[in-house]
Structure formats: structure tokens, C-alpha cells
Picture 1 (tube, one colour):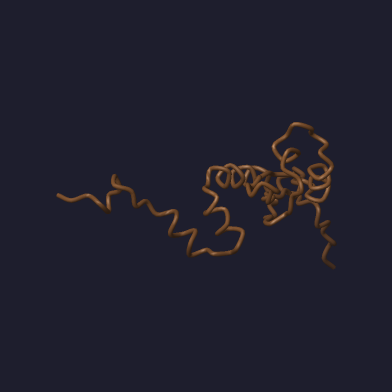
Picture 2 (cartoon, one colour):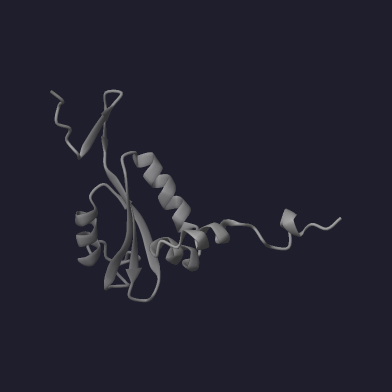
Length: 120
């Protein structure tokens, strides 16, 4: 008979790996905030209660959760968060709205120094 696996933890190489979430909040001023946490519900409550006075989000309430992704490896979550933070607002909106074709287009280099624009 198979063992019941606790969904909250994954045992791998004798290490306990917690779930992690990368999330995007839509702020009242029209900007987006991207973060990573191991407890999404708790973190959202902290943001909404302005627990960290002076933080980016506390100055831009109310907020709305518009995207989140679940990870079993915190390193992958951190890498994804860092990548998203570098994106333009338009690219974040494409992710939020599941417009994967637009994400692919915006990932292609098309500026004047692109190899595609090179003329010999």
C-alpha cells in the first residue's frame, strides 16, 4: 500500500523542501509588485495590513493578487521572481492574462543592434 504524501512538503535527498509561491500584486497606482513567499495567504494579509510601513506596497493600497505560480524548489521560485521583476509592465500584463504568444514576441530582440537587422 502506498504511503500518503504530505502535500506541503517534498522529501528529496533527505532535505525537506517547502512550497514557494511567486506572486504579482496589482497596486492602486497601476503598478505591479512581484514577490516570493512560502505562505501566500499570510503574505497577502501582511501586505494588506501594512505590516511593513514604508514598503512599496504599503504606500499603494489597496492591492489585488493578479498572478501566482507554485514551486517546490525555492531556488527556482527566486529565479522566476527576479526574471519577472526585470520585465516591462506590458510583459507582466501578458503573463497575468496568459497571453503566451505576446510573451514570446516581447522576448525577441528587434532593436537596431539585433542580428536580424544586420545588413552586409
